[in-house]
Length: 422
Image (cartoon, rainbow, N blue to C red; front, side, top):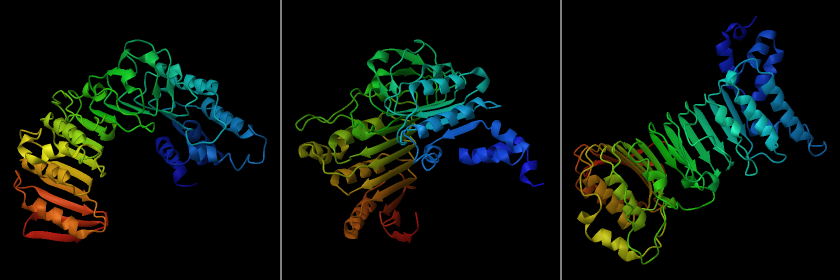
């Protein structure tokens, strides 16, 4: 007798869930008790590690043998399930040929859509040659759905309510065709929605419980053609994560862009990625977004430090009169600001100073400075920040160089250099 085999079945299933699926299957030969645990394992992950185990076995066989073995193994594992499949993960985007046929993918989704399976988590990352199987819309118990590298071009039931239990939806490099354009779908319990793909304006979702919305940069490198892809959710979400380089940049002689944004009455956290603070257009957008968020508590910015290709006069217009910036009223409850990737340009320093002057409740300002092996420039910028008045008497500035040096700046007399491993 051993200690592990006498554990409850639920505990043994959790143990198998921590193993690669090949090792979990091998436990079936230990005893009849472990065989039953394997057959009832409800979390199945077919990822690169799973498919690579076939490469060495079939490297000298005829072409197609390896692919047939992969498909056959997945079929056997699914059909031999003695319990419900709670989570199914299939990652084939990084796996070399051969790929499963569309009919194989349809068969797996058809099996998972059966009511007895009670599927809760589904991740499908295949390839650009596959279309999304319509069977997943029969999985009414799904709570977390992640789709990648599909072509979203299929007749969807509706318009109407889909995925009644879904709380998290992620699209990664999914192409939405014009066939779904203009059709609205209601996902009543959706709380988190993430896009990293093209054609997202073709897919309209109504989610009254939506809290977190993310729009990341697509590998296709396309700009957002319409701002409504995120502005339509601003009034209900609590967290917004946005890749700033997706925003269209006006031509050289154009006026500074001012997108009309609704008031985000519930927005508490804003994450801006790849924000070029030295670009007046992106800076103007960021300021307006912050200004239109009266309940904002945390602002996190990953700055993209690069030379601005815009007309310098547009930046000068913002720098000449700080009081004319878009933020005209205090950010009354903003208490945490995190900015990384700053290079020390004039616009960047003005941006940070303005946040300090408009945040009476600020407690912490974390700044990651790009030192470029020039500590004198870094210290100059830090001293400049220290001399600038702050609206909050409790505000502390933490500045971290790329060399992992941490500066704690509480006042002009208190500059302590701390060395830590971050």
